[in-house]
Length: 295
Length: 264
Ligand SMILES: Nc1ncnc2c1ncn2[C@@H]1O[C@H](COP(=O)(O)OP(=O)(O)OP(=O)(O)O)[C@@H](O)[C@H]1O
Ligand SMILES: [Mg+2]
View 1 (cartoon, rainbow over the protein chains, first blue to last red):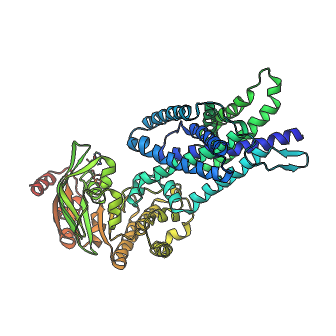
View 2 (tube, each protein chain N blue to C red):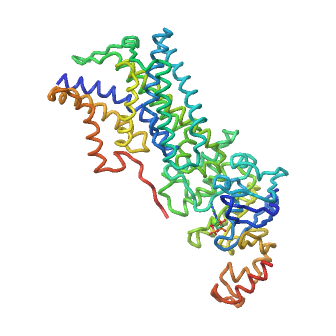
View 3 (cartoon, rainbow over the protein chains, first blue to last red):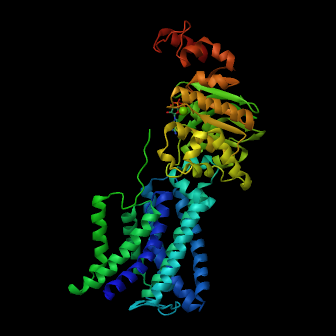
């Protein structure tokens, strides 16, 4: 029983990080109607940034986070201005191709700057140990959960209560109406890329602290993708529930199924199997917004 | 306040839709712009509001002047800032947002944040029917409620000139009357000029000061609203009345003869 609970708890922690990354995905999807193939690469860059600021520069954690966020903001603005702005009005497929190109560029950049090597800063993140009965929460995961929850809450408040948040949601619905309201859609786009980069980078720092950084860390983008499909492509609330679900499933599968199979590796597949089954019965995902149609 | 001087509009560099349209809106006036389907009414409004540029349309000739400033080269965001708001054809609600959020979106650029709350209440004063629906998802409102909401939404920008595109579209006659009454009140109380595009000539001329009739991308007739109401051609083609007051077919021969007379 303790073993199971332990798996649930660390699964929840992992799931929160997936949620965080998936929100970046959802925002780009809502605003630009395009899948951002490079979302996982933002995470990978985040991991490397974590290494640079925490280990190379010996900055304290808060300063490292702030510095990484600053880099993420610049990155988001540059990406929007240089690669996506010229694509406005182009077919969605072209935008997706552009994000594929972007992912390749980011991979190249990581190789150039960090040599594409495995870097780790395990133990550098502050350790908060929490013991509830027999249950102990691994320290790096706890700080990860706390940061993820804070960022997710900030984002939800942002969408609900700020002018820019409202402008983003409105832009997702009807670009022309939003422009007739005097809102600059290019600003909204830039903001959406900035947010996608910030959540990706923060997620990367957390994941890097747990298991180190390598270029393949970018594959976590696939998990975020699964979260988004499972939760419903345009629902932030759905991303939260689905992220946690996927994290828990993955961990429980790793704990119980992997030992049964020689070689293991089932943990990584299992969440996708669940995703496929859910999508068969609920094509809009668990919480997807349905198209409202009225004549 | 607004002068449209002989503008031509071309979509995607090849499709010419407006072939020299001129009209004028004076301070605080209600001006009706009438015409059959495809005449170019919506295009005229989009040329004024700049939304044309979001559809690969372009004003290729002529000029649009608002409050002494030439605005035909401006984009929609800059034009909105000069005090023009377009309420687009077909309601265009932001369906997943609530009624109140829809209103707030149009207050985005307002500097006087404190007065925005008061303006929301003012919108609900004009349209009491949607007050109780303020937290509802707007996509599920009835057509009439949505139309009220989008007019109210336009008010939130506090424009000097509102471009209203077919507010009666798809509404029952009684509701059309009600909405027109409110438009008249808004015009009088807010001192807001309104350029009103309509198929429903009777309703529009009922509240307008002056009217223009468009056909094939040109203005073919214009005059004081009372004069237009009494005009035989307008009665026949846009109010569904013939001279004798009975319904008449569009395909009748006389229709073409009269039309010819206008165009030349
Ligand atoms: N974005 C566009 N691209 C190409 N052609 C367009 C575009 N928008 C409108 N048109 C064409 O311009 C002409 C005038 O259209 P417009 O929408 O201005 O007419 P309208 O007078 O508003 O008609 P209705 O009463 O049916 O709304 C039509 O022939 C239409 O096909
Ligand atoms: Mg029209």
